[in-house]
Image (cartoon, rainbow, N blue to C red; front, side, top):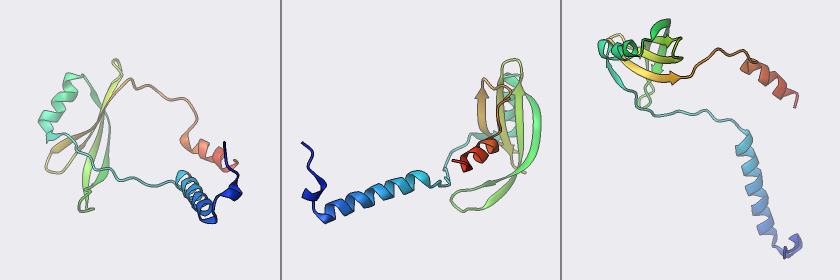
Length: 128
């Protein structure tokens, strides 16, 4: 049997209220995340062999900066996106000036996207 609220003390009700408010607040506030991850890195030659084995071709290049977590220091790097359109595999790598290359992501089953863009969803969310 559920007891009516008046049978509980004021402190109990206040604690329940504060816990509920805290839960709602933490569930609705977005937090940024810093992830500490380990990347497989090797010489340019050794990493490129992986893409060559998968017959992935260099499709996009760009410049980026990678933040080292323990010091917060940023390091410049080149960003490389490799793809095999036939097998729908891709890899994303970064290369530092000393030619150390790291594999950020190895991907499968990629395909073109023809849906709404993420910022289109943000416009709809503001109206809610």
